[in-house]
Length: 163
Image (cartoon, rainbow, N blue to C red; front, top):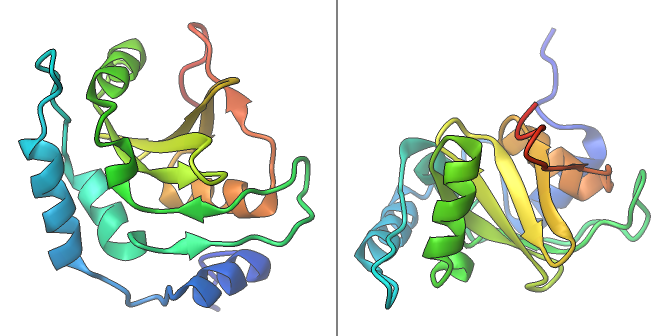
């Protein structure tokens, strides 16, 4: 018996945004990778680009998710999976990566730019917003379920970096 990859409600939101199980746009993912690698902040900070990020972009990049209004714990916000929304945040992401003991790369945005979605070299996903830094899940699938269902993410602290 095949277990579905996503819960039905999450699968529906993904499909409405244009996702399907065999979606893979490596050309666009590589273009984003090239743009991020080429960018240097005025202070000399650069983006880390790694396979977990490129794979997430290839499968989900460019999707705009519009979850239903009701959420499990919080109201889910729109999500746009486009790493260039973090282009000018190389220093911020470098600092987060050092705090987590890994590299971090932009993944997209949530709440129409109020939060920056990021992914680390191990594939874990985080959100950074004006209220703090949040752990969304151990991989892109878990993070998408958290975001679409309005599950309360865990706040990052110096004692709890990942789960």
